[in-house]
Length: 91
Image (cartoon, rainbow, N blue to C red; front, side, top):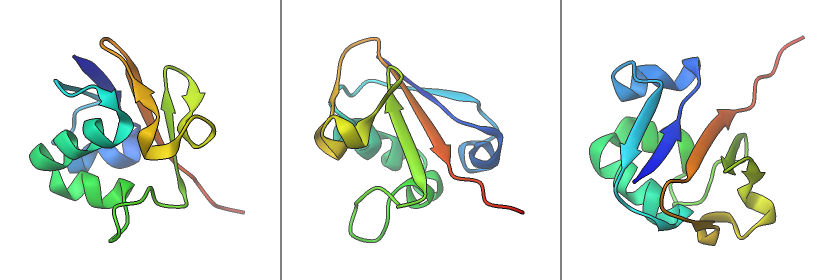
């Protein structure tokens, strides 16, 4: 089981949940595929139309930025925590 942690701006797409559990593990792509099956609106906020991570979304697997460890191919082990953080702009 993998835990996906969601910040406030994304919780509305997941029924208000701050954390979701998914059975998939192995790669970040597999975790996000399972997440998309249950929460398609949330998935569209994380991935673009090509299935790639959106440029303004940061994803961490056990605290490590997935873009530095393989992107969607980043390894995700049993019991891992995946944190999704959209960039916030302002001024």
